[in-house]
Image 1 (cartoon, rainbow, N blue to C red):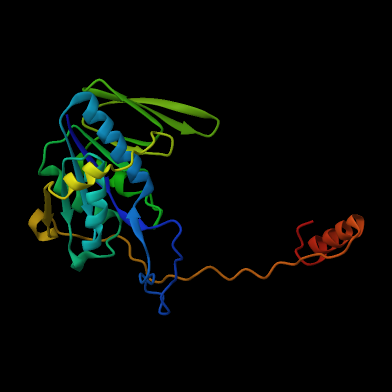
Image 2: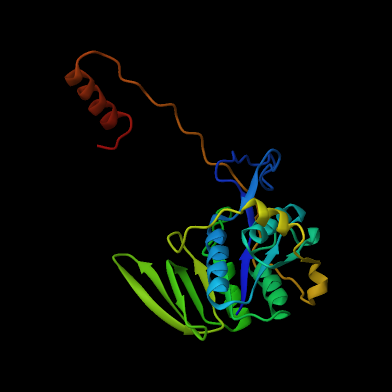
Length: 256
């Protein structure tokens, strides 16, 4: 089976994000970058399918030069090769443009199933995989917590409020991974050493023969307003403190 996993590099969840003074984006200085956590579930599922059916896992990533680190991480986990579309001219591309690049790269290789994270934790749009499926004219199965395949079809579980959907589609298809689908493995030391020698094909957008057109543009970023300082109610009498708390909640916070 030929398996593709799409990955994106995002700021670490513990990174302190600061907006640039002009609102044009985030200040990237000092930020630690990691593979998008939902994409990790997709990579792990791709590796499980390789173990079951044999074949190759190809990692596809559209991102700046630093994104090579996330590609190598996926290769160290067990993927076989990578495609890195690194084109500074298109940094900040929206979901449509990003999906167009990924689709163009994937069209040039054999594939039976494509795994993506259900969303990226930086822009949180959750659109790329759906647009990718549309551009490739493939069925899409999204926000999946279980995926089983016989090599010709894939059957997934998609949780909804108070219930679950069981959906089946013919392959090839696009599947987006949600937390609970699996537990991503750690890259072993031998895997890290082998990853350094695994092939990664670095391309520009022009190499794919696609004309990019962003449908949306971030005009400005504004940090959330600072929270007012909290209050500590002092005193030795619990009843008096509770009364003071109720008063503050009613008169200042206006929540009761």
